[in-house]
Length: 233
Ligand code: CA
Image (cartoon, rainbow, N blue to C red; front, side):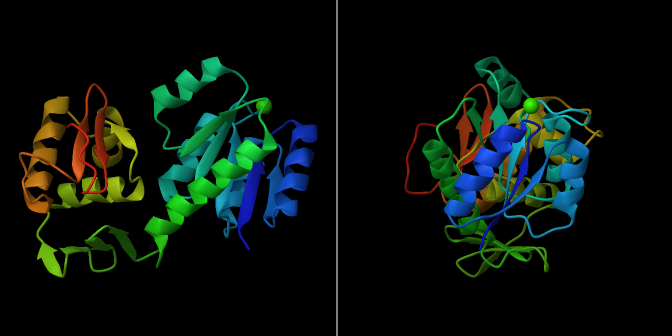
């Protein structure tokens, strides 16, 4: 049974969510502030987090960042206003989805199911392997193979590919990729990132000049897509 952690300070909403989710067959834990939410998360065993953006104390943004430092657990943000959506998207927290209050419970359930399905696809055999189409990343051996053939990636290319494989089908902004891969030690321009992406493509794409895995999202960054989809790049 999947376990959902709700971090939300509006108690009536938490009660309603608990009732609905338990009826849907989920186990539910709830915290009313960011600090205890993080503590609960660290106790482990959480399959999805419903996270309010505006929380007393440690707010939802910091909770999301903290969780992302150590986990790729699916996170759905709950926001009070449409205006906050820009904030979420702008910050690129690594949340998987968001929903604006007041929301329809059935829509939320649909989102939860979609996000869980997506994460299951990439976390079969969770800790050690990530797979996307015919690419398999063995994180224990630190090795990437495509159809059994080893791809020789630099540590940087490996980190980039890992980010893409953890967030398939999502447009990942350049700034996000840079922060994740270089942390505070990035002194180049975003062109530096583009160069590494080009190298990565040359290793995983059959036709690097017409990338089918890692596509450019104009004005934003890059996205890992299914090879058969031929969106313009
Ligand atoms: Ca709130």
